[in-house]
Length: 206
Image 1 (cartoon, rainbow, N blue to C red):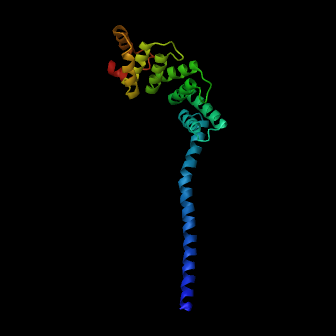
Image 2: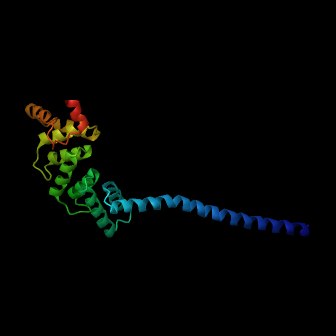
Image 3: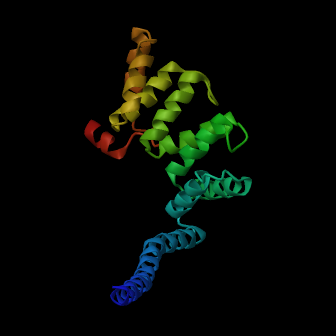
């Protein structure tokens, strides 16, 4: 009985070792395959950002801004990339910088900078920029408080299908007199270069 058990035990141990040797490289290889695309993508984004690509600069800055470590160095780098992206015309970066400037988190609170970035993003046709600019006019932050202009920008953002703007437009409308509401609706479709009205909405108006 013992003579029979020993070979069986040896065979079992041998199979276990072989299985372990066979499985380990496969698992390690799989992990590397999973990690490699992400590492390559990050490198490609950084290269594009350094080459002046505004979208890559925004993606890199936004990723650093959301880093869970919240290190001072990462925050400073995030702001630097976002500013480069905004200066290169990326409206999403403008909106992030505008929000940070308004809140004073990650940047010194600066209402003039907040309104500057939101006005630029809105003028370039970004619906979220229009929404945020409407909020600045509604609250009198960085600009003179003006419920008529708040309605105008909420109205433009709503026309560009921003659903938050629809709700906020209706809230502001309830605070306007009949004359003010009429004036706000007259101003909303103006086609001057700085109106911020999306080109497709202008086309519908013509």
